[in-house]
Image (cartoon, rainbow, N blue to C red; front, side, top):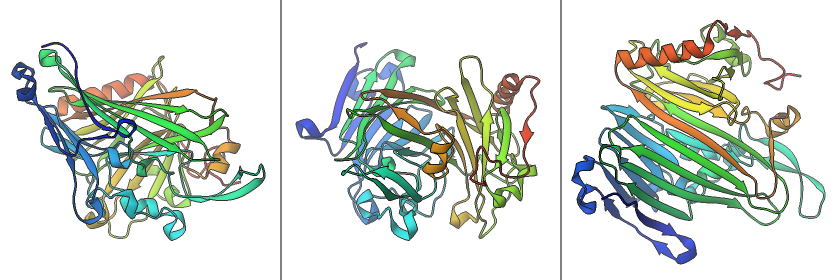
Length: 400
């Protein structure tokens, strides 16, 4: 068998909805392609009631996509190593149970537990006031919630494709999420996850289109979050950083050890650092969290031409409070949108324009694999040295 096979699981336009589904080599009569599976389930009960999940297992790497939550990647595993983190929000939360404006715009946190979650599309960063033109053409102040809306919008179209090719068989999950309403920006996110059977990585391609007839602003940040076994006492962020600065005075307290992580500490107050990455000529670059021993690493690959900004999130709090760190490539830094607009980091999409973003999640579970990534980072840096600022700087943080 060599022909691509496709299953449409959700299509609102045609009133198609498949609640449960199992796709594997037995169903396709192609056992030579390996031991893989795709399982679609609808969760029942609690805050997860009504949440759709798609569990992909390529025989080595597994990951769970949540169409109900903006096509986020909830958790996974590779070679026995867990991907993601132990959030206080234990299970996927149906957006119907969230009030985004709760606690001064921090309601987003009630459902925050994904390994990879998108922040956007109209805004991301801290909640705060922004000025927009309202439906009467007047300048009006609006309250923006934490990290925007896309992570809490359900997909209206979902499909799974299998491309048989023996050991190179591909598993593809695609979803379409619309973020739109009258008198407001109109975005369409087309997100595609692709993994090869037996591989240690998954590729993510996001295409964001402004399908309005007028230009619209666009922000996007990928909150890529990892805990144990990659994060431990003495773990490192390995990346080709040209420049690093603390986000605020709290982050400045530990800026001398910005790339090193602490043991779990109850009540720890988060720290964020802003980075500029070096990249290859084609714009490709990467970052890795590796454990202290150096035999496990989780890598995010991205392109600086698409995602020029990078934030490191440190949240090494108590284990029950969510011991985690984040690698966050983005089109902008996660400040209030009004500040990012002044600094020229808010993108304007023309009518019908599509902005494409490519990401890869990769896992290394041997010392040799981790060392190879470290050498790759060193090669990108070459003879360049990292400039570390001891205090927040005006081009990245609102200190003026």
